[in-house]
Image (cartoon, rainbow, N blue to C red; front, side):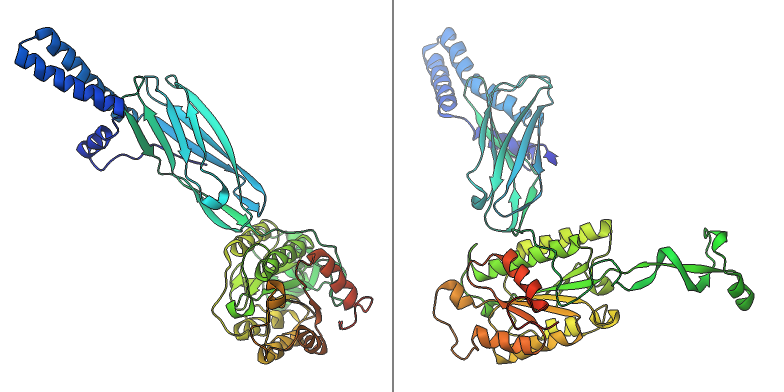
Length: 455
């Protein structure tokens, strides 16, 4: 929720000049008529006409002064719910105006600035607001394009009861609407025989709660004395306690190819947008299944971060990591890279990668166009992972255009080489439902579907 008061000019004199510029045609006419009447009264020596002229001239000036002071007595706020929505979904924006002065306001017009992609600019007319009163209005925004869109500043148009002055003030507060990629629910399939997020197939690691471990550790303040390991205490000459353990979460990496040269076309129905949406669906599904997940791009950048190899943690931190990954996908664009070398290093390298966890991590990859060199490099990523599933897109087919580079291997050739390296590789045709491809990947991995997968 954002709130604030209208922004004023840099100084009092500058603000008054800006207020004078808000005189309407009626106000300027009153001022001109008053000045003319005062001049005529002075020339003709008519005192009554002079009083009329002064009244006509002073009335718009008094209205200017009143509105100039009113701008500091009105506060506005905006509430955006929710702040993160999938593409195509609506968010609700609620505006509230509070009259904090002791005087009623005149007619008010609210206008909120929104990007064109979110819809038309909302405008509202508010009647007189009593002292201490409040008015609330709302509108909805939606976008079919992912991204981060600013909302604001809120603009307030003030008018006096006589319609002589009309001033527009802008509030300083902004809000940001994050439109994340569309996701679809995925079936809980097993891919290449990897263990589930938790369970009998999971390894066990040292932690702070769970069953006893035979390896003791030094006593720490607050440890339960019932966990003292007396044999080790006698051996080491200091108080030792039994360690505890808990199941370690299986790890999964979602690799998204973002290279500009690997994709053609743009818009919600392009190959790249399909890959982004499918990657988001995979991330959400794997997190729901209990995996520690990271998002990796061809640039080698990991999300949520470098700690633990970029993998998400459990509990509240996992929810934060999910939000961070979805925010990243909301704004991810094409990279200028020409190859997958950095992604290969991130998958095969250390720093919390698969090599540290015994090589049983799951790799889900979304590839655009691959030449011979990049196809071989992608195939080698499979060697130290417990399971690898690739969804390969041919961007020229998606764009309905002839291939840009006839030297590129065909989709069938790319799939064959990936499968020979042990990948479960599937082609993603234009407009394909990712949920169906996901189920096919699960059945192919165990040899019950389309041939080519290896467990």
